[in-house]
Length: 457
Image (cartoon, rainbow, N blue to C red):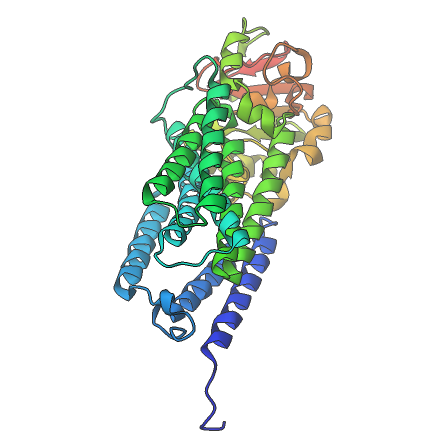
């Protein structure tokens, strides 16, 4: 190599960002299959590491001559990175599978908050020159990121039981709309009148309005809709990160934000479709209240069964289909369940697991739970792939599920879950339901049934 040759630092940074973007996309692709999902997460994690190290090239002043304002406080940045890494590692190791949705909600919120913080730094930076398009995107990113932060924190508190029920008041949608309109007006003032150099008090009022709107928008939403809300805020976070990436001219942030935003949007739409509802209906309707008001008397026949009798029935069955729900996760019974399944398989019984798109409290929650117990992937089937087989099953077992198997979704037009696709467990020749109680499901609706259900504990 020519001793006089010197690599341009900007080339190193741009190449690193390209590599990080490739790793993000490739990792997301591998996450599409349970078989490769684990390695996909590792690949995407390496992408984030590469992007972080590339950012530190600015921190250490390699590009200081071209961008003097990027001479960041190295000690502060390193301390923040170290604290975040330690906290994430510790909390990730400690968190139970049943609390994974809460952790996802928190991480979503932190991503949105980080995007909003980037915008705040740009808006409050002395002597900054703001062009109109980057300024518009900075304000939009700040708005969306702030809403994702405060909304995700409320979703976490609801899922974690720190906030019980919902909070509503007369004319709440109108009030929420006014708060949003005022916040937009302040944002427009910062862009078109102040030119990005508004007083710090005005900027603070903008962020306060955005954070307040996130709280007000999330508080009325019922607990059964929290998975959709978390997915929606995930999309918000990605969108905010993409906007702020454009403001900073950071390709890694732009690509990562677009990937997360598009994936989160698609997931939100798929989940809403699985519940036979629109996203607008989730956000603007009083789903939880409707469930309580329209519950009505629980109908159907519930016949207790001895565990031994049920075991004999399943031992001599040709096909058994298991429909797990969140109750399985709470009981941490997946390992014992798989031990039982192996006994059936060894006896020549065909066993399949039927997974509803919204089983548990987040997409993929039940798949991960079963994989943790060692259940082979080829025994796990999605609703659309297995629903037609229930009529040929000798036994269907419902474990800790309610809304996802409730036949009221087909017939009871007054039920809040009417029209939601369900697992056709009631079409099996014999149905066993394992539940801690005989009351309501997560949506507040009781488990209606046909006369051939047996309940055992």
